[in-house]
Length: 118
Length: 232
Image (tube, rainbow over all chains, first blue to last red; front, side, top):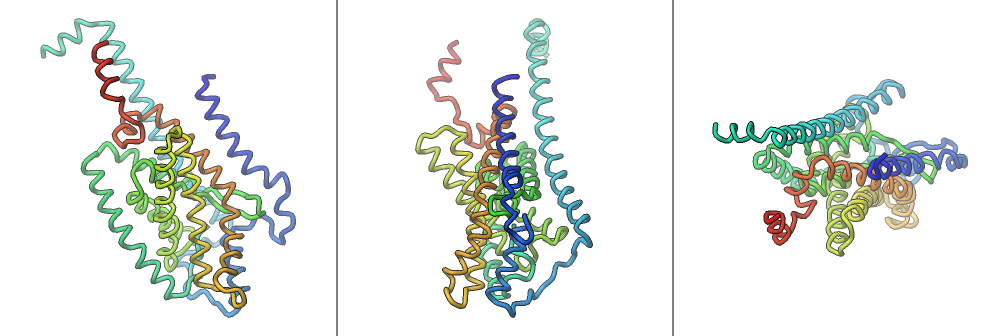
């Protein structure tokens, strides 16, 4: 494995550790609902500060269940990951193509000259 | 995590909308100019938007025992400057408001202001400062992404504190409360976002040197070096 790959792997490992540690250490155990969303907690805080506050608008479309919601979140992540993978794959392919073309012109110098004349 | 639909009083919602609109309009202009001048940017623009899509879909657990998600706006702000990121961030927020009931249309202005305007500007500013101080590129990228992420949620806390001042301790009391929910939760997530942004930037320096040179992220070799190269 090259040094570059090792560093990239280490970066991913660190991110994974940061995500897993709070779960592994049980940092949500003191809560009624461990690892709820911060936005839901903010809604609770708002009702504590202003018990009469009623949200005056509701979402036009609301996923009918938690499953559908997580499916849509997964879709969002998949769309993003797909585009990113396409980008890096395309770049890599182009670079390899260019390298191969360069190697070919170096190997067959007369062919390159012929191109120039044409 | 964005402010949920209907959770900002109408006056606040409208005011944040008015504050955000010029940045987004300016961003759309900057984006069209960039695409027209450098059509080959389109791919990397798409990749920057895609990075925001992935990161803001990842709800991660944090030390506070709650969950939140990163924003992914630092990368695009560093590559294409904050105005363009305002557009990409708004698209992500719209997608989430319309399809996922996450954030909302009435709170879109406020959420755009925090995630697509203040975050990218604060991150880009930090990136520039750290680079000018002579730090290596990746240290600057990490700091920029970290600040873009964290500042977004500090703004969210301020927005909610202004809308819902505590009856006893006022705006400051509310700010402490919302800051505890959003900003503290966000610290480890901002570290994660910094690390992931560094990872993507490392991949970009390997795959897209040309783009990074054109965008000024990588410095062009100095004139003297170039002459030496030409001589060699």
